[in-house]
Amino acid sequence: MKILIVLTSHAQLGNTGQKTGFWLEELAAPYYRFIDAGAQVSLASPAGGQPPLDPKSSEKDAQTEATQRFESDDVAIRALSNTLPLSQININAYDAVFYPGGHGPLWDLANDLHSVHLIEQTLQAHKPVALVCHAPGVLGQVKDAAGTSIVAGKSVTGFSNSEEESVGLTDTVPFLVEDMLKEKGGNYSKAEDWHVHVQQDGLLITGQNPASSAATADALLKALK
Image 1 (cartoon, helix red, strand yellow):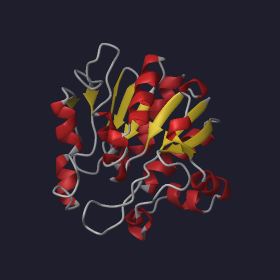
Image 2 (cartoon, rainbow, N blue to C red):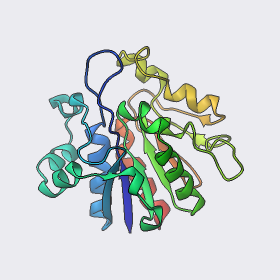
Image 3 (cartoon, rainbow, N blue to C red):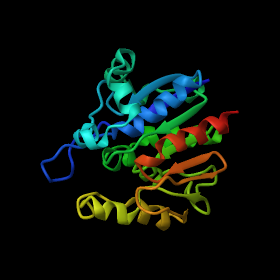
């Protein structure tokens, strides 16, 4: 079982002067769900190499058992510093794809044609794709074989408008994940802010927020059985 995790390469939080990137919990929890299940895990990003970490995700109040395990894991840290360039990925080498969130993907992966084609090819090959928190925002340009939005008519979730408002970034992000999924015809649902919520519609799996990262990974593993 080989799983590809796709991370952002975008480090700037709009025009705020602050840093962003991927959210550590949303990488760490799925990473160990996959590793502990016996999967071979590879990491990729648009630029390759070391992807930027949202500094807030490594602060004390954002730490979890999984993030602490990741930060003390030399093998994981080495893999993170050497992500594969997304342009070099061949989906035939993998059984599934997972996208962690963080705000970064809204700027780069949402508009990255390599990412768009990777998701399209994965689903067309009858392999599952899972995305958590802000990562469902990368589905905006993804289409099915008939040219229809991949989320149209599907049960989906992602970082909610109210969660974005609570972190004060509604006017900073290039678009709101909830709004985009609804505009593309998705049947969007959510739990209370910061509670676990995962939606699966066929091979497309989405999680609402950081708290949903492990459950989203579990759903992906189940889809592979």
